[in-house]
Amino acid sequence: MVPANPLGSIFIELHSVDSTNNYAMALVHEGLAQHGTAVFAHEQRKGKGQRGKQWVSTRNENITLSVIITPFALNISKLFLLSMAVATAVHRFFSRYAGDETRIKWPNDLYWRDRKAGGILIENVLQGSEWKYAIIGIGLNLNQTDFPPMDRKAVSLKQITGSTHDPLSLAKELLGDLESALDQLRSQPDTIADHYRSHLFRRYQPVRLKQGERVFDASIKDVTDDGQLVVQHALEERFAVGEIEWIL
Image (cartoon, rainbow, N blue to C red; front, side, top):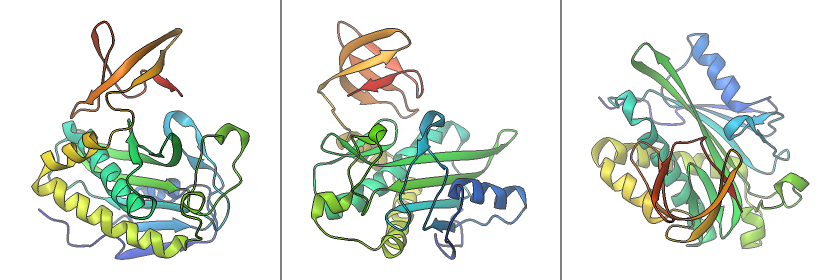
């Protein structure tokens, strides 16, 4: 069943919020969530990234957006395919402006060359074995040029293109890409996975990885449909999301 509401049919624009994902999650808990609700903030004070990290964004300069969806007929075992679809949408959107050096870094960061341009955080609401909602959080660097020391590898679209961009209008444009990717996920899931893999950051290239106290070099080989990173060194290994860190 295809949800009736297009993404952004309800568009909530906030001047300031702790986290757009927190705001969206509150709508879910209050029984006010509808498929397609988008929450955009001009300022996000405590944005959330992967592994509990904070996403730092300067006021009025970037895209901080969360979208509530009902995962249609997707089985709960397909959680990572949704992540692939969102990453594909963000990649298509950003590469339209930044060009073909845009890549998807496993599991779901956006990179331009070797610098981070954005990130995705999907939080799921489960009821038993039923997948009720997914809250898709997207942060993209648009106009920010001054980043904290911990984000020395960050890059913005303005630094890439030399132009200033309107965060609100581009956030609405991004919703169109996300809608298309979700349609594609419903009808042609294999093509979503193919796009994700074909634009994978450092694929077939050597990288340095860290697993606990172990640091090792390997070549990025693939990502499985359930989200495991496949690497090759003396032997092939697979790692789930959160099991290893990149050392760039």
